[in-house]
Image (tube, rainbow, N blue to C red; front, side, top):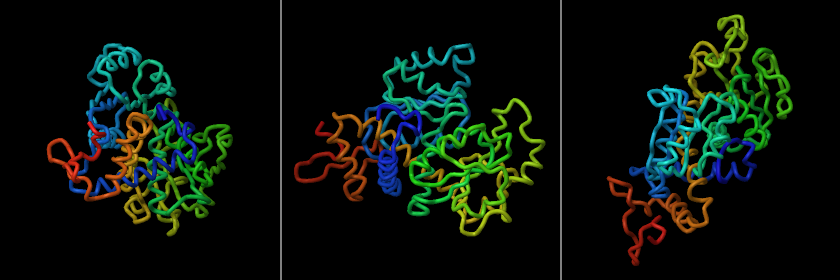
Length: 343
């Protein structure tokens, strides 16, 4: 895998490989020293043209826990405000020779364009209303941790599907993993022809009790140029997931940020059925797995090093890092350094 632009780039085996590797990295995250040297010497550039809390912070943490160097770039306060184009910004930053660029933009298809302008591995962290593949991967991971698997599960995605990049990626990812997906919301917020993706469509929540998982979406008002519903009060009355609509056996998900009192009521958001916090926690280890897949596991020259790192993640006593830079302690009679690749 050279880039991660879309869930369409991944088959079921690839999704499972990333999710399983994320589970191994979760063991590392539970240790006192939360770093492995898998990407020491590599540079990850976070290039964000839109505001972000969860995605940006989790990518930064993921890269640092893999011992990569991280550079954060926000369009606000940069030459972008002076009229610099996306291409010129990418070419300028590519002069620093990043190994990976994590890109979020308001423009659908931008990540694919950037692949042609530089040699770095590109991770699509959200491109307009198109896709958000790492969100879908962390949602699959979260559900597998909660349910054990999602083969045959019924998953309802409720809310503003039309403006949601998360919805498109999740429809593809959940179906690849064997789930049945239904999208529900006002007719104005359900894209015409979305059934072509293989999902069912409902315009009311009358059958919501049949779902095993309810995935709520917020109203993407920053992407709306006109009124798509009469009012937020009317929307909440008909489509809010609340204590009357959410059954006791159902799992509740949301990609964040949540608008309390609109798509979700406070009672269900704070209930044990909600796994919103678990989704945030999964974001770090899943993005660790994605960066590892792109920058270590997929490159033949790093095969031996990759195997050592995987072994470290499975053996708690094999990893003892110095507090400063995550350098592993020397072990074994030969005095080798785990993860050093014999350097």
